[in-house]
Image (cartoon, rainbow, N blue to C red):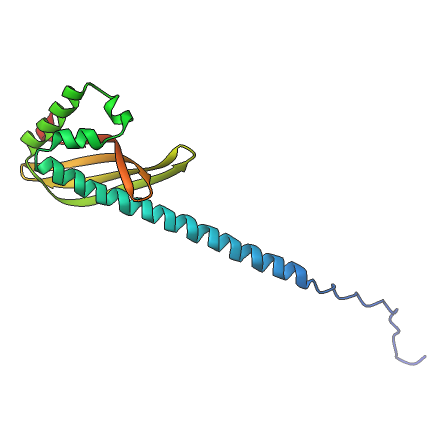
Length: 159
């Protein structure tokens, strides 16, 4: 037995069986997840677009002193926040002290889709004739229609 070393023979490990079904399920799940995200994102963008357009309409009516129309277009939730005369007086006060609304810059937004509807919160930095204000809007969006649920404005001119 000259200089050779014998190694015990070990059985070769078996290669893992190919699992093409697993690969297809994983790929199909990934595609389904992407479609779901795309569909939700598209719906959210549509709701944002409708609410953003409603802000422009709100400002146009405010600039034209159409407080009754603003109040009439709002939801029952908005109307329940105070007496009609108080709500209209508030909108008139905003217009009187701030002047016409001008350029707006989106400062933030949040979209919440629930079984009670889709709600879009938008916050803007708005330039009015007599100063700047931070405005907050809450809209209920259904299809291509947005109805006002809440409006908040913060400006030194209104303090």
